[in-house]
Image 1 (cartoon, rainbow, N blue to C red):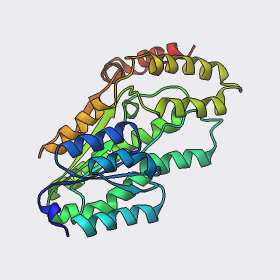
Image 2 (image 1 turned 135 degrees about the horizontal axis):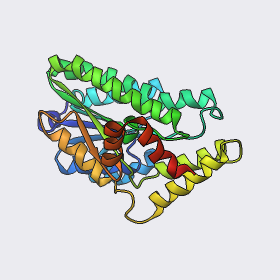
Image 3 (image 1 turned 180 degrees about the horizontal axis):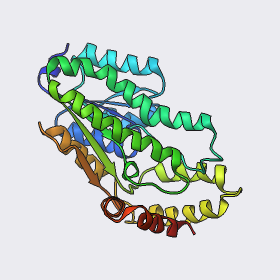
Image 4 (image 1 turned 90 degrees about the vertical axis):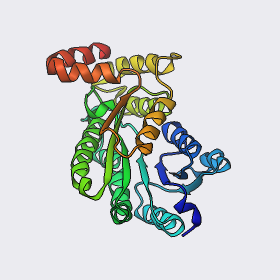
Length: 279
């Protein structure tokens, strides 16, 4: 074990090649953490390496990659103090036109990979009697939208898993935090929209797909309409720095108002609000 581990907390951030993950890595470095960053595109993390991070090439769906990452961190620094489960993507398209294989992969990335990494990180946290697991959900874990069935299913699952895990780990001094971002200016929207149009842009759901794509492009491509990744990174770092973080942090454009409408106005009103953007 290196001497650094006794001086600074150790963080692992997944999905750190861009967007929220990259910004979070930078913020944690500024706060003095030993920061491991993980992503499939290790070449996209050279800037983080130059700032002092330790990039790891890791596909969150590959067991061997996850085991190797945990083994390296435990060998060099004794384990993880703060785990930021950020890796994920949005699969959109009608439920009917989306293959079950694609749906399984959505769950592998957004839920099962995160869960497996957490399983392997937990023994050292329990042994030390402290740690923080920060799971990046979405406002999509509390609301829903047309053509987003599989994506929303994964984020609702992240919410449920995190709530149960929080109760299980409380006796061991390990925190579980849920981050619920709204519209954030990252690669997420373009990747999601391109795939959605391939699945549903020309079939029976094309009217909904084209209307939704128009609304989403307007939101994400208009300067200032979507929040910068820094607003999410700020919340993550805030949770990482305190001994008793909140259970949930909601931030970013549209997140608070849409979650509020869904919670207090009920299904019919929310259905009308959401479908009005897909006509």
